Length: 189
Image (tube, rainbow, N blue to C red; front, side, top):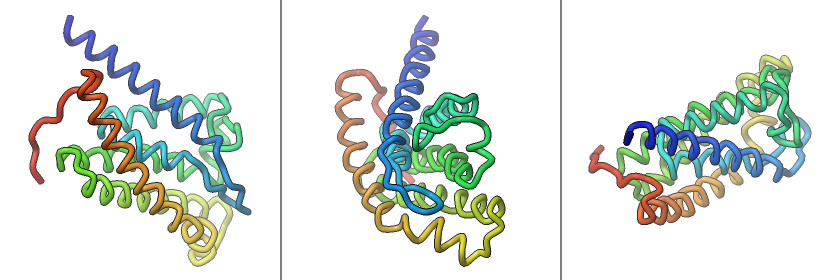
């Protein structure tokens, strides 16, 4: 019974963070090719709060829900065409970034300093995935892909990494105290 309760809890948490990502995706600042949105903040929060495995699953759920046409992506968009379009690489990068960010945070026993480093690494992963797809889908040069798909997001990405780390670790501690999340095992890097 404990295993099924744990699985149900993980599914609910996964769904909640996919929903949070969908909500934050609608907060956006339009730019010519790729908007600045709250999606990447949601990825960082998700990974920092719930860790690698469930965090990556939440991002898979988010991408799958959007791929079938539910308008959960930035600008209330949805459909498989978004995933194969110019901005789809960022969304695919969310999955990898959530896993890697969560893994680093888990290994550091959920410290804010390591969460900040993990979220910066996650931001880099998202930007690389996004830039590569942007380059090939729009047939851009590498310098044009960097100029439109990476450079505009560096400063705001660092701010989001800080917010995801600080808010994420604070919320995680409260959820552990409330027995919503399990206490972290003592792992050392």
